Length: 499
Image (cartoon, rainbow, N blue to C red; front, top):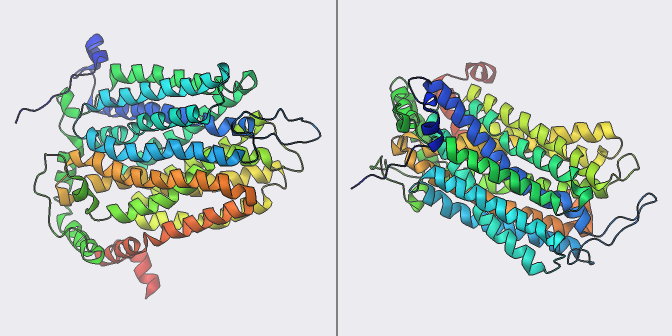
């Protein structure tokens, strides 16, 4: 069978000093981390405009200081929030469907070119959506169609960047490294919110055009400089060989741990023999831990994306200290949630590395997020200070497990012992987990659009219910982790207190 070797990034041929031996392995690891960070941050920045312009497209609030301009048809009728929810559903449904396809394709195509295609396509479609303002388009079908196609291009990004990082880094401190790295989602949300809000006064179309141009420019940079595999530069395969060599010292304990998990979860009883070929879709589903974490992410992402798409709208329509904020101020204030999300992702990754228990860490964050959301809803409107503090705490706890599952957990499951460190399975496993989560992400904003007409208390009840269900899917895995760590004697402090 003839191997398909992807071409080296042309930027390295333009600047030969970027190649080994002039540049070390550590340099290229950091480069891969930074390039994929910026790449996916630009994806999220280009997703943010719909949430920022919601309060402009929807019926305006009538206050003493503002007079409504009626919004933008077809989103300004009595069912305007329903139409906005359907717009989110169109994008996120195609995104979730595309995620399964792109992850499977990512194992077989040149990841760098595939990623660039997703970035340029996303940028063009985001710009086209903004042109609806300039050309005075009021057809719902136009906006839905653009969002559907854009969702397909956006779905290319995540499996590609996770596969690249998985290739360049072994399992050691993966939770912490990916906790820092996964802050690209929150950083992208912040950049997208600030950019879209800053130009909103010039017309809502600009809120789409600028992020669209941004992701295209970054896509060109990725095309020039991203190196997908260490082998492309003559280094050893870090995602596979180093992980397998690291297993020698702790092989016995790892085998015992996997036996416990396999017995408890009733999943794959034997190893997948082919360690070099791409793993099958159903085989990936049957890997230990994939299904529970995928369904947990379904509900976790439902909550996270409801905030992503509706938080600026909620802030705009909820008085803080008796005052309704402007569209621009509400969009910028909503970034506090994402700032908390940055710390939450890093903290979850660090804790999970220290205790070596991803499920236990995720459940802890999920449980703590319930009182945080209740406090934000009840006391967030008292003053600006309480609003900022509780929004920050909510973002930290909501995005913690979401960040952990989409990065470290996906990479762990995609390169686990059962498939002998097969890094080619990584994009498929990542796509399954995040694709399943994206179905929940599509459902959450849609439900919020309909339920918000009954009051925001109902929306928060839906979010809390989703958090509870997310935690339930991880109970068995958490019990397995606790049992395994106690048997290995790694949680001696717990054993002493239990006795």
